[in-house]
Image (tube, rainbow, N blue to C red; front, side, top):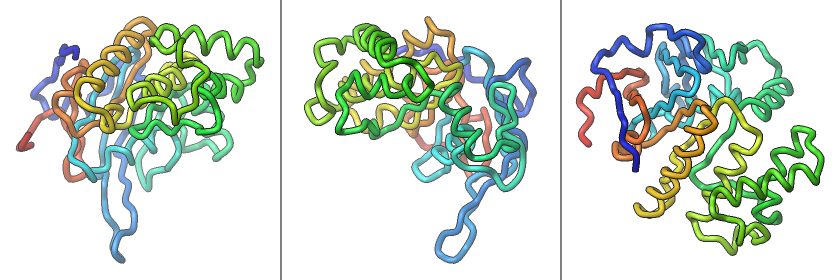
Length: 249
C-alpha cells in the first residue's frame, strides 16, 4: 500500500478554511434516534478537502463515519451547519436536485460493492453513464476501457455472482470513477476483503486518482488503510480532529 501520510498534530487544521475546497463542512451537527434517545454522531464538526486531495477519516465502528459520507453526498441532511460540495450548498437543494448532483459530481465506493446482480460487470459500470445521459454505445466503450485499466476485461461480461470479492470491488471502483467525478467517497472500501486483496484494490484506486486528480474522502477503522491517504483526520465522540488523540490502535 502507498503510505504518504502528511498528518499534522494540530487539532485546528480541519477548522481552517482551505482555498477552493471541494468538500467543506462547517459546524455540522447530526443525530438519530436510538433506544428512545437521540444519539449524536457529529457535534459541530468541520472539515475541508481540497481539489485532488486524498483524506482518510479514521474512526471506530459506529462512530458516524458512514453518516458523514451520507451528509457529504446529500443522501442525508444535517440538523445544523453547512455542507458545501464542489461549490454548491447541497442543503439548499431539493431531493431530486441532490440526486442529480450526486450522479454528476460524486463517485461512491461501498464496502459491500452494491453491484446490481442482474447486470454484468460492464453493464454495472455503464449504468452510471447511462443515468447521466450517455448513449449505450459510448457508455459501453468507456466502461470497457476502464475495466481493462483495472485488469477486468476478461470478466467484463460476468455477473457479480461469478466474481471474487476483489473483482467485485474493482468493478465498483470502475462504476464510481467512470463518469470522471471530481469527488470520490469511499466507505470502508477494503473492509470486506482479505489483507492482500485489499492492498491490491487500494493501490489501483490510488493510481487512478493520481491520474484523474479527483479528491477522495475515505472512511475506515483501519490505521493501515488510513495511512495510504495524504492526510488523516479522526472522528471520535462526534468531533473531527487531525490529532490522533488516545486512539488505541
